[in-house]
Length: 581
Image (cartoon, rainbow, N blue to C red; front, side, top):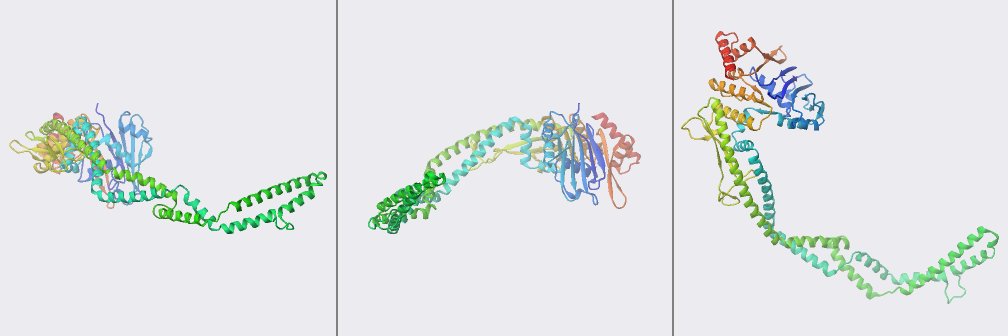
């Protein structure tokens, strides 16, 4: 049973298109029409559904928005269905509805299964649902990097496993090499930094500061600097509270409070309120006695020692030297010293670290060499199978004598390389291999890079052959080919159509084409038609069946729908296509 994805696309106000419905079926669908119309209808619209870049110029002048809606059949267990459901989408009987709306102002919105989603989700779903190929893909296939990617994709786990290990080791080697380069090229700066740290730490260690010492010394200096004033104030206060023994007639606070207490104490029994006041006066007397005693002790212990004051100021000056250089307070200085010691240990360990990194770099280089060799072996084995499969496909595409091969080589280097096959070679994030696809179009012709040795038609068929091979090893449900038959004609075009029809046995195939030889092999033939009322150009889609299909193929063949010769040729094409599937 053919598993198909795209059932229907509905397009409204997209460029020249107005409310058109593109109904797709299982198997092989060909889309034809006037130059550019089929491409705009199918490729651009499908590109929007698959999360492609939105251009406000696609919205027809006078319309508010362009809307593209798609109806897809998906397996509920497929990765696309699971991802859609994770985003909140709903599937109804295996059908997933997706839409993309593009406003005239350039704003874009996407919906999947009735739920608004980021446009990027459409691209994620597209990776598992549809493969789109066009002229840009042919140009991409000319690049060696794309050819290596194609080979790795075909090889599958045989390359993916070693490549994953290689990539991890490669990233680690880059990190180790960068650190080693930093250590060796900045050795002078790091040595200077170490000397400055060492000097500072020795200065701090010589001073031996204690946490909070600067605050304690500031308080002591303040006290020692005003010792005489403090002693005089304490003596006056003591006399005011406790009296002067040398002045028996003097009045002091303690005597006055004692007199007050005696006055109320004699009558306290007559009123509880007054008794409470008497108690409070008694407490005041006790408190005055305590304070007076403390003042006497303070004055006795206060020592106006100029020698101690000088020592304190000298110590404060030493600490100020530290706080000027290493922190606002002594606490900050101690934090700096702790951090500086750790940094100095790191800097002093550079030699050891350089040795460790050098050993790790050498080990990683050896490991990378082994992994790169494993990649080369896996790619070489896969390249033989891949080339044979593509060559067999080319035989089915009217290139019976063409042969495809892969050149896998490495570039030797005298420095910064890894050893592969007993020689130092250039390497990168994907290994040391340079992969190039070669084509010998006929016997006796030397294999040449397809960028130099393939014509436009040959390149189209090589790309189609590559995709057909991929379809057998890494299939997607739907393939869209945008004029993949460019540069092909005659018998080769017939063979392209036949091969696409065979591919449609295992996948849904949609082809935008201008070749009647290709369209004749389609299970379903859609034509994009334009109409113009003098001010607005609109397009619609019509399914060609029976006589209508013969007339369309005649138009494509000779530009004349009613030409008897063209009609006969069209009928012959259809008959040959039905017989040659």
